[in-house]
Image 1 (cartoon, rainbow, N blue to C red):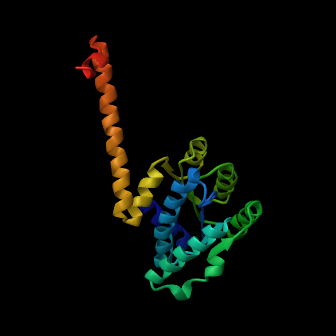
Image 2: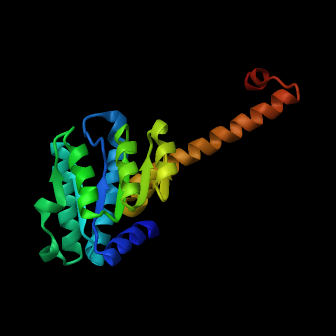
Length: 217
């Protein structure tokens, strides 16, 4: 969270904008739904921080439903900070057809002199395209995804990185939703128990004891 405020503060100091990019934000695909929800949760916090600090803030999206959700989130964030008069919602949240978003965003990275960027959600090939250009224009970046084959690129290029399930954890933390937090905590307990059982089983096998025999007792 401190890094989010740091990036937005840098944008304010330099008088240059920040972009919040989520790449694949389809709400009907189970494989990307979890990171998409987390990215929206973090967007709510980021938009509110941008409103509070007075940073120019843009959220380009390529899906109609995502556009509606992002617009509502940004609008509510500015209302929460009593900064509605500073928000031009149709400019802050932009709908771009998939495929056209690459040229539009890259062009504006250079023409606007983007000072900060957030790459959060389910990222695929666009991760390298956008982060490379953001690095070249001198933007400070926060990147996070659960897409394993793109985590190395975000870690290598971005100033700050959120790796794998850390994205879900940050989303749950900033949302302050006890249901989401409890779900993550439950998963962690399950993993902890699994690790204990694996270690215990390894020790028993090393000592020559039969786990099958112990279970049948």
